[in-house]
Image (cartoon, rainbow, N blue to C red; front, top):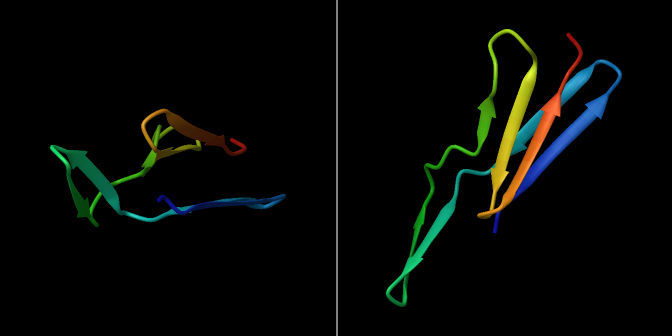
Length: 64
């Protein structure tokens, strides 16, 4: 289970996410607590990306 939060107001955006990921295969599960799920998409533009699950992607763009 992934925990993510995005707080937006007129001054900016704050993004946060956990670092746990579960790998499942051969009837086994392994949890790693070192995954990166929050990325700065561009050094030029204020765009952040959060990844959760296998098919979900959140993209946040701040003011430039």
